[in-house]
Image 1 (cartoon, rainbow, N blue to C red):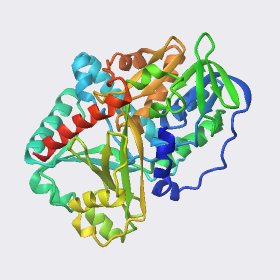
Image 2 (image 1 turned 60 degrees about the horizontal axis):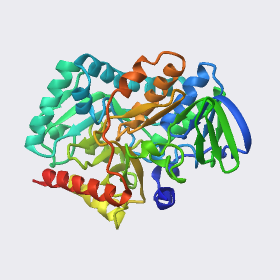
Image 3 (image 1 turned 120 degrees about the horizontal axis):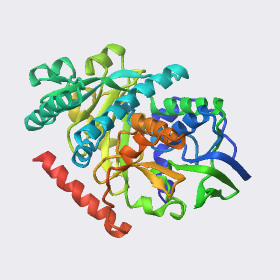
Length: 432
């Protein structure tokens, strides 16, 4: 099972090493009831639990491991406006509805910053995000996207011409860029744990080490674990790629709509502040424009955190540290003297069109998945949309449920090779 295959990838995480987790919450034993049952203790699950508890509902959250154990505690920490699948959204929705969807993503950033302030979450939030073009052709395409955002969405993004790149990043690998001052980056695990603290303070009952092995559907859904069960009026499935870890009995029809994508990150030893400032002079987070992209940022304690080597096959690359370190040195060869004490990885969920996949099973089970690398802000907003829908205001949730999704090929024996071949094609396009 993926959880077993993945468990070792989080043992040397910089994020885990730099937090003090609270004592583990209890394991679910016996039968409990609530208005709302939530499966999954990442951003989406914790967010919907917090939102509904604040509205007066009784909420119970079940997490298979510990809060933030999955992608919510391992990702690159980039908080980004928009959707990875914005093009798909524009193809499927009217211009007015695509604009409404975009505005939801902008509100997601505002919600995240509001929660950080309201709940005093110390998560090292830093504003600023850059997309950097790896070729002159991609720089031209990026400039077209900047113009599109300004004209269609009235969203301000600053173009960075090629002759000005040196004033933003100490690297010769890029041919232009875009700077978004409203996006940014943070310590993802600190944020997730802070949100869970806020949810507990609002009255949410959280059970850890309580994996759901079966969901009984009906007028009153029931989630069963090895030692107990949760009966509720409404249920929210927010486990993403982990929902099928225990036999696929929870919602097998959802699993063909997403695929686990491996992403791997290293963190260097700390640098003097002046050296760290010189790498990224505005301390913005960065992603490049390749299909299988690299992403990086400077942490609050002046390390370079560098991610990449995404694997769509589900297999961890051999010699993980050296593999990612080589990619880092291609961008910053001046860092060859730095040691790499931390390396970790995990799986995020992606859809074929990279647009989010939200919806209902029946009329009382909601699901949230397919964040495709944009989950840090969007998953929190997804929780708010579900809370609105449960409370009777489903218009914004239903807007995003209208996005259609083509399933991945049936069967793991063809699914992973087919996706891997597709990724290889785009890698070749990036190289050529």
